[in-house]
Image (cartoon, rainbow, N blue to C red; front, side, top):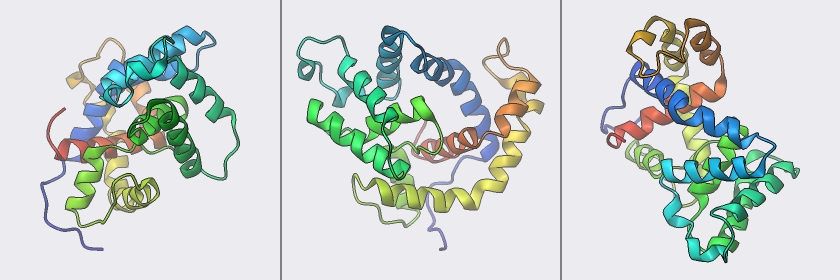
Length: 214
């Protein structure tokens, strides 16, 4: 498929450095805390994720019936990750349905983002900026159609995969431009560059930044 003319995507090198900073500033701690044995630490991590990714607005407090903020969502997340599914599409859709039963809102974006922070790849984050960018490229994606979104996301990702890999592997040469020099070494960036989940998030940042800074 030939992509339509649309707002230029940021370069993989830009997105790689941008996500490297985002990982160390936000996502790494949230991922680590969601693996913690203490349920309160996991709950607090989920609250941070909901706020940082802007999905808290679709998870109204009044739906929680007095429980600690996002405790119900945190419990559901643990259960869904322990369950067996044929594929990651089914897991995301099932979790979306469970969250919807509690919060009664459009929660696909929240479900995918919570699951990604728990398991990372192969979960792909459903985000309005990513949907918007792919639509500008000419792909038809109905609102809330996670399967089609991921299929088209992966189609375009494959077209950029070589340049994303190269940009990730070049990070060790540009870490002096990072916000998080106290946390980052060339060895660390070299390890991240070989992680598929990291490369996928670099592509997310290419799509998301094409819709405006965030």
